[in-house]
Length: 300
Length: 300
Ligand SMILES: NC(=O)c1ccc[n+]([C@@H]2O[C@H](COP(=O)([O-])OP(=O)(O)OC[C@H]3O[C@@H](n4cnc5c(N)ncnc54)[C@H](OP(=O)(O)O)[C@@H]3O)[C@@H](O)[C@H]2O)c1
Ligand SMILES: NC(=O)c1ccc[n+]([C@@H]2O[C@H](COP(=O)([O-])OP(=O)(O)OC[C@H]3O[C@@H](n4cnc5c(N)ncnc54)[C@H](OP(=O)(O)O)[C@@H]3O)[C@@H](O)[C@H]2O)c1
Image 1 (cartoon, rainbow over the protein chains, first blue to last red):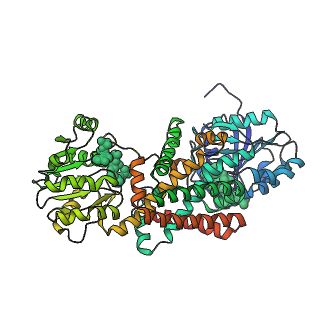
Image 2: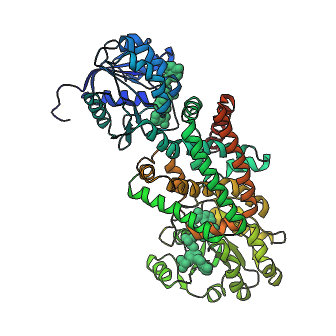
Image 3: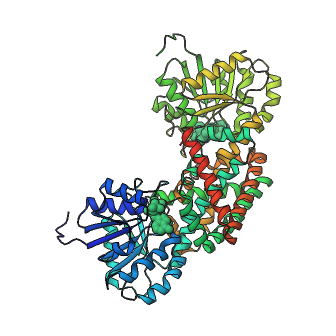
């Protein structure tokens, strides 16, 4: 606790209290300097009942517009493909000067879809954020208050967003335990394509490749997965809707990274085919070097 | 402790006390039912000094032939490409009826290289083993006594190996805490190509792809690697010599799996390019289904 007596926000609204949304709420309940009043909003009665039961919000609402009316900050925590649609429901009723944020894993297409709304409601400050944290689980039970601890949160505010709004969203994520950095939407999507989206695509794919093998081999893949395959499939357990949206919305950067990767994998295959030891070893050594850098950056 | 009073082996010799070899030795020191006398053998004076210092062997030898003379069982724990060469040094001096084993990650080419020696020394029982356990670290300091606990150990004995020898090697690995299964060398190499070798190849490759990106993006890959990329690079930290040998020695099965994988990755890329939601979602769902099976098999 610092000597801060007035919370960062009076009313903070989370739309979509799933893994990410419910983690923000949990942190808010634990640290009352974040918001005086925490509102959760979900379309599904089961999710609303569960959120009430968990006691991670002061108010639980069904209707986004009702939830957002008194908000100082609304954070949309739904799949990427639904963000602009939810924004269209809340922006007309939001207070002048209030902050609208979202936590989608892709930014270019979300910004494109948001453009008409941003033009129409210039008094709402739009501060997109992407907390680089997650697990393979989803829903309100999956969240936890320390999910964002020591993780990065990337902000991609449009050019004309007031600096004070950016500062408040930065403060919010710092109170979540995260480190914050700002960048353009294009740069964000390229970085995430290689850091997260391509690895997930490869993970889903290798599971499919294994699943296509002759029955005998396939069953043993399951038995013997301990070494290597396991790490790949951990991330392959993630939610289909979320990943469909991410793949489709970050199409361009992702396909560019996939093309580069396939070319590199084919070059490695050629080196193995022709027995080109130098190429093989130098590629393995590059992998280790990158890994070493990661350890030095304390992300390992 | 059971009521077993005579150890499984009188003299057990480990050639190459690295990650795998030193883990076997440590377990042997902890559980004296495994062997009365544990001998470690390494070409490097530094490794021998370190093994003596660690106190994980009763005897430390420089020369494989000297080490193997009185052995009831010799386990060769060196990189795949050096196994047959070490076998050629020890087999001429080994006792009639003694067991020779090795722990290489690839079996077909090792068996091919061993064939002339097996014909020449028919009184040595050859029982290749592959403990499906490991970390990204190597050397005598990397090992630990519980490395093989609850892991699979695959045996690939040639047809004429005496059943008693297979039973003793099975008993050894069970005393290491592992579950044991036998299969042919061909089947072994295909299963390991998809379960372990292809994932490692992809991990090394994606690190290289990331390393080729424009400088600005590359530095951020390191910063933001937490989600997805990290799991891939964990296995990319493994030893270059070991993996060079594995890739070159399991060339055929590995290249077959790589071709299938690249075709599948390209199909996923096409589905993303054309916005074929059904294909994307069904592939993601297959990944999750495999993952779920893994969890049910308690390998997760
Ligand atoms: N998981 C991660 O690793 C991660 C990391 C960083 C950012 N993100 C981003 O965070 C956002 C949420 O992800 P999550 O992992 O928290 O997902 P989640 O646990 O599945 O939660 C998603 C929430 O959105 C709601 N929702 C789904 N479709 C909706 C729609 N069409 N309209 C309104 N609400 C809808 C869901 O409500 P119902 O349950 O009632 O359907 C649920 O409350 C996504 O944009 C994702 O890209 C995820
Ligand atoms: N690591 C894994 O995940 C894993 C899993 C299952 C099986 N395996 C297999 O286990 C074996 C050993 O791997 P490891 O991870 O234990 O490796 P490691 O820690 O690097 O140990 C290898 C040992 O082999 C010795 N060695 C290397 N080249 C040699 C040569 N040409 N002649 C004689 N000795 C040599 C090394 O001695 P110096 O240090 O003196 O050079 C060292 O003692 C490999 O065949 C590998 O495929 C590994």
